[in-house]
Image: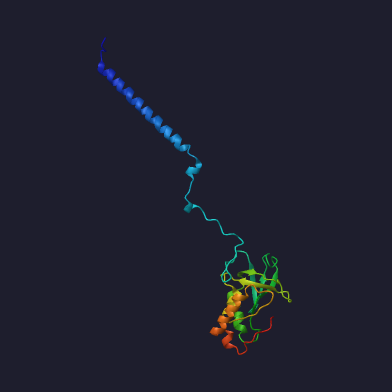
Length: 214
C-alpha cells in the first residue's frame, strides 16, 4: 500500500539524517577535547633550552685579583688611620662579628705621618675606603702582625683592589712581608709602572729608598 503523504516521510528521513550527523560531530569534538586534556604534563610544560634559567655561579668562585665584586656582607670601614691602616667592624668571617679591629694592608707601605706624601696617601685611602662602606678581604699566610693588626688584601665596594691601587698611583711602595706573597707579582708590576711614570711619591719625594717593614 503506498503512503498517503510521501513528502512527509521524506522530510522525516532528512531530519533524522541531520540529527544523526550532528550527534556524530559532537561526539568527535568531545573525543578531541578529551585527547588534548589528557596530554602528558611534560609536553605541555616543555621549554626550549634558550628559555631555561641559567644556574647561579658557585658561591666559592674566585674573583680576579684586579677587580672583584663585594658581597652584601663584609667588613665595614670605621675610619682610616693612615694610608695603609684602617679600622673596621667585623662581620664574622675574618674579623669576629661586631668586633672593631685594625687592618694593616698587606705588601704595601705608605709614608708615615709627617713624612713626604703621607697626607696624600691617607686622603687616597679615604677615597678608596670611605667610612661606612663595606669591603671584601683576603688573608695570606699570617693573619696578624706583632701589633695585633689583621694583615689583609682588601677590595672596596666598587671592586677595586685597594693594595694594588695605592701602589700603582704612587701613594705606597710595594714591600714583601714574607711569607705573605699571594699578590706580590701584581704589586711589583704596579710599583714598576708607578716609578716609570713618576707617579705620586716617586716624583714628589726625594727619599724613595725601600723602607723597613712596619
